[in-house]
Image 1 (cartoon, rainbow, N blue to C red):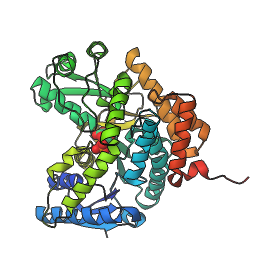
Image 2 (image 1 turned 90 degrees about the horizontal axis):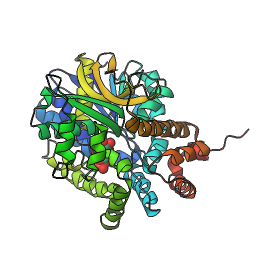
Image 3 (image 1 turned 180 degrees about the horizontal axis):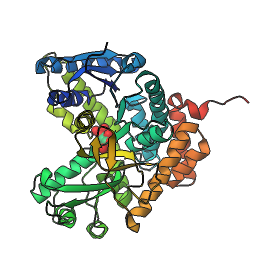
Image 4 (image 1 turned 30 degrees about the horizontal axis):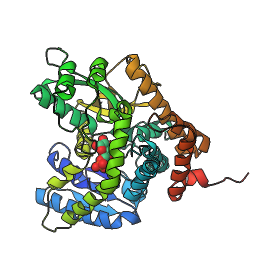
Length: 444
Ligand code: G6P
């Protein structure tokens, strides 16, 4: 018999789990979670046990009545769940390191969410999320799926389009960082500002308005990117390299940090190649960071989220997931930036694609705030990337090599022709174990 709200977290052994637990503890009065199931696979057992023990200590120290279960049995956990959150990484960090390093060895950007690496992460992740959805249909047909596994936009679209599962919301922390940095530049509290975001995950733009309706976007562009500005980083994993001021000013919208990969491709590549030679790829840096985080988590006296977790690029992700769950559970109508089905909110991309947009979160899910049309400068890039996403998702589902090669060719940060094919082939070989759809031949 289930006791109160039941949450299941797949990829529960993640180093981000303490933030999730902290987020639930903070909201316990409004969101009485009685069961939290942290699920992982055999390869993640050790991490699950360490971080799971820490989660239990956190809950105990908070004095809340919530059971924390650790399991490798996903189906047992999913039974009668109310919310399922997903934060897993197929192939663990070693797969990410290959995603980033193989392209870099060929002198091209790897990038684990929007470059060649991100496309491979989609190939590995989409079949798994679709199998989770199939389990949910059977075991918890009324549950919500809150996904923050990357590439979050493509994963959300795969769930909607191929999983035929509507109760899904995808989530990213970039908008949270962007809101904070604008509020710092304007020296105004976030609650006094209105942010209008639209685009897709890791490729959205936003405008900012004051309480009286005055637009403040250009003021923030000046504050962040004018030649004499000195802004903070929005996310830890992307260097705060200056955008070309004149170009960004002309957009009349603020780009997200990932726009640097498209607007300043050569500078980003140069920077990544240099970092690769000295500290390794970002995945290698993160692996070292994770090792020290897990050493901390082993401390039997540690019962709160350590400050060191903020060095990860995904800080605030899990807290935002808790807020979405809270908003659905209590029909709060909170405004959040999420990945959800377009339904015509952005004119320039297909009706049934996932977009990332300012939305109102209620018991029935995310209601996007209508955006309309983008000017050509944004529209062109958005449509290319959306088509690249569609092809990538299709290739992930079908295992069709030609579709994968088209997706590679279309991605603006993957060079086309021979080099695209060489990198595609090498990545396929390197990830063979996790990509059966590309290698299993169905006998006629
Ligand atoms: C950003 C992105 C996330 C991504 C993270 C990577 O915050 O929004 O989607 O997961 O960076 O951070 P990491 O510390 O793993 O490089």
